[in-house]
Length: 59
Image (tube, rainbow, N blue to C red):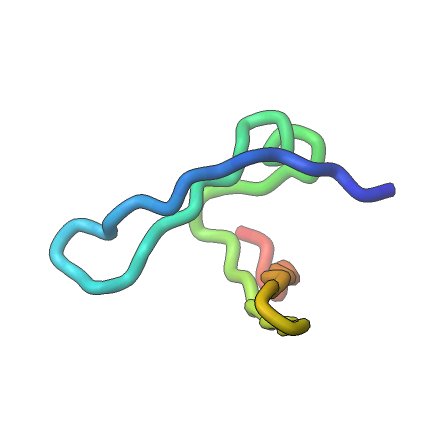
C-alpha cells in the first residue's frame, strides 16, 4: 500500500541542503524517531523523479 502526503522543502539553517518534514502520522505508523538513519535512492524518469527513503538504523 502506498501512502501519500504532501511536504514542503525548507532551508536547513546554516547549510545549502534542504529539509523535508516527515508527517506525524507516518512517524507514528512506522515508529520513526529523531536519530533514525535513512539511505536515499533517487529514481529519475523523464522530467520527474522519486525519492525512496529506507531506514537503515533505528534509534
